Image (tube, rainbow over all chains, first blue to last red; front, side, top):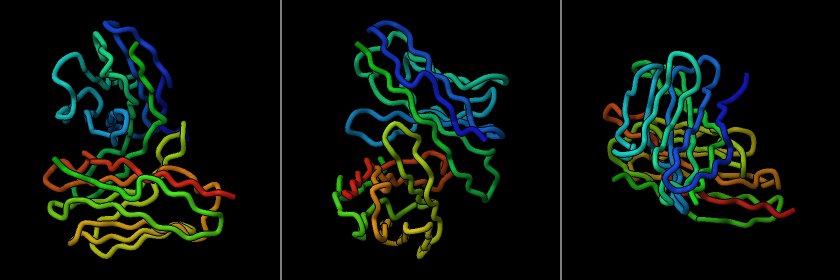
Length: 117
Length: 114
């Protein structure tokens, strides 16, 4: 059973370009989470999605960032008009659909390291 | 703003030594405490998730304890091996409907010298 896959692993963009980060969850997982790790910081929650639905985007910057998890295909984190401050490692995690009273572990991908030049 | 602190930041031990490190988290609105092991260029790997005060979990030579009343967890490694070298992350999940929103510490980087 393949784990959480992210691609690309490394992405270099010039200021003003768009960055698209992809995440394929583990087989059977319908819930995806994105986290960002800025230099010298811990992982910070960005957004929580289930297929075709954003459940919680409270950690996403209000502008230039968007996320989707379509019915078919990977989850995409999209950053428009990137700036140097967007340089970070972006991690995706997936889980089974949470049920009341149960805690499901989040399984992480290896991350995408975005460098904005 | 939730604060999760891990100490020490980094640690060097000799092969065979036993070691431990700490994760401090808010003692209110506790839901769960997660430990992850993260090797460079790989995915963080889930070690333990603990939900009850006094929980103790064990996996091989690694074990963890939880004190939710005072807001700390210890991770212990017995007889460290070079392959234990990694960053160990803890993450706090709070109650109140958003327990999925993990708040991570910055990690403890463990280096085990052969």
